[in-house]
Figure (cartoon, helix red, strand yellow):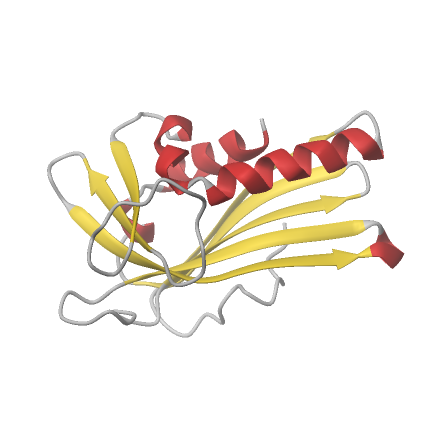
Length: 170
């Protein structure tokens, strides 16, 4: 699991959570195609809910004023997570990074999220969740890394995060 990816924050306090899912493609070309598909799914935040089991979470990509976007995520976008029971969590897309390591026949794509404070547009605390897609030759891995968590990862259970990362590469 790519826990050492530079977008995964250092653990300072609270909880640390990690989970991942891997598949082996039949060829490097297939793995490259799967990687592109997984990257597109990761950027398509509004459709993440269809990978969550049970499907009790709705995701909305928005600007800082709550205007809903119908496009792929960008750094600085906001995400509203509606959880069963009426809770809504506001999240900032802190970073999105693609890296290519041709000498190792490896590439990564990662997105780091953090909760937004209710009174400001900045992070509420040091908590982050980083989702990493990695292709290493024919192996494709999707993983999440929660750091400095005080509550469950952005309101999702461990099982829901696991089903999301599986859905990204299945």
